[in-house]
Length: 246
Image (cartoon, rainbow, N blue to C red; front, top):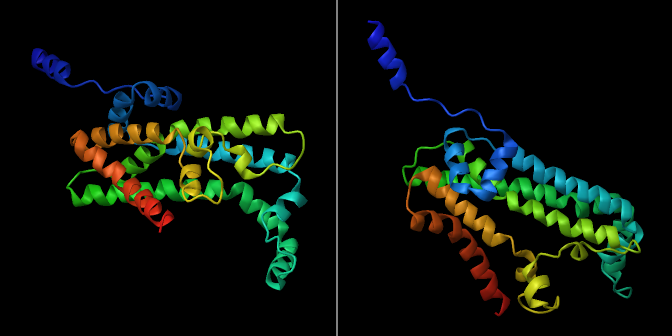
């Protein structure tokens, strides 16, 4: 009886010890396959999401502390003084300048939460349609942890705010990593300006992590994972490219 009990105890698989969020974040960047294999068994998403939210809030507060607020409100309003409608808009906006400043600074935080949630909903629907057994938390974890490299985006505004010699800093001045800033240098009136300004050099890394995570969480092929991850981007930006030249 004792020997049988000992054999049964030896046969039981050992559970992996809990992994700290810091270690998991490091693994996502250095060994993503191992990181997402762990998340498949222990899905969680709050740590990277909070890091990104806190980063955005810190930059927003710093930006509001440095920027010339009167200049900022003026710069984002219609400038045609001879247009009655434009003047009316400026009068109304002047009264709600606080709201304009808030949305300008903290808008990215809301975008972050909305887009991470939309990503997770999309993955969840695809999983249900393809008979992948998983929970919504798994896909929210994939969306949030694969976005971890976006933390590097806070380096650019930090540098811009440190070297600013006056308060006239636009939101565009805080973006150093966009494809337009790094490669294309298009003007605002050129067709692909909006597209290249929104995409950053970090997007390919985020896509790669998403593909690795999708493969680990779904147990499917690289082709399946790549198709699921990249299809929305190809559709959205493919339409933008087409409409930019129409």
